Length: 268
Image (cartoon, rainbow, N blue to C red; front, top):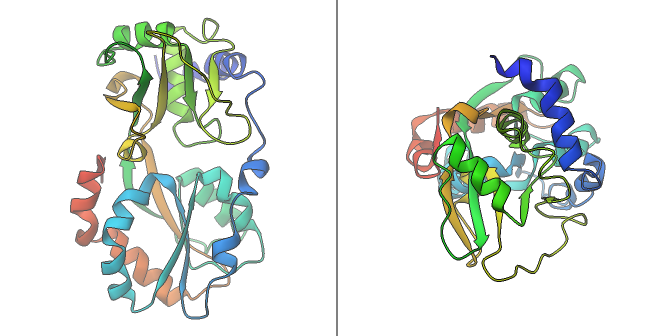
C-alpha cells in the first residue's frame, strides 16, 4: 500500500495524539527574524532549515570565501521561518523543505525557477532516561519502544512530521499514545520528570540529532519502510542580490560540502 493511502488515517491518528500540543506556525515564527533584519549591508542574508545547520556550519568559512562576502544565517524549522520569507525583508537565499520553497515561489517571495534540491535526510530517534538503550531497528521494535515510552516528542510543525504520521499509522499507535505526544521545544513543550526506568523518545531529522544534550542517547534512524525522506532545497529570495544568491547555491550544490553532508548523515 502506498504512503498516500495512509494519509487520511495518519493525519487523524496524529491529531488525536497531538491534541492540545500543536501551535500555529506563526507563533513559532515569532522567535525568528531579528538576525536577518539587522544584517549589515553587503552581507549575504540566508534563512536555513535546522536540517542543514550542522553541515553548513562546518563549511561556512569556505562558503564565505566562495561568494566573497560574510554570510548571516538564521536557522529554524521551515514552517517557523515562513513568515520571514513572506515579510518585506530582503533575503538572498532560502534553504527549506521543497513544499515551502514551491509555495514561496508561487507567492512571488522566491524567484521563479530558482528551486535547487540540495540533500536529503531521514528521521531518527534519540532517548532520554530509561534503564537501557531501546532497540528501534525494526518496525516491531520501534512500536514496542513507542508504546513503552512515558512521552514522545517531535516538532509538530517540523519537517519530520510526515515520517511520524506514516510511522504512527503503519504501526497503529496513534490512539495508544494519546496524551503522551509533546512538542519538542517552545511554549507547548512542558518539562517532564521521569521516574525510575521511565524514558521518553525524541523524533527529529537525523542531522539534527548529531548534537544531543548530555542526558540523551542516539538510537538510530527510523526503519526504512516507515521513512518519508526529507529534502532540503534552496531558492533565490526576493529583493536580495541574485548574483550572490546563485553563487552560494552553486557552492551548496557543489562538492565542497559533500564530506560535511556525509558526516551529518545526509545524502544527495
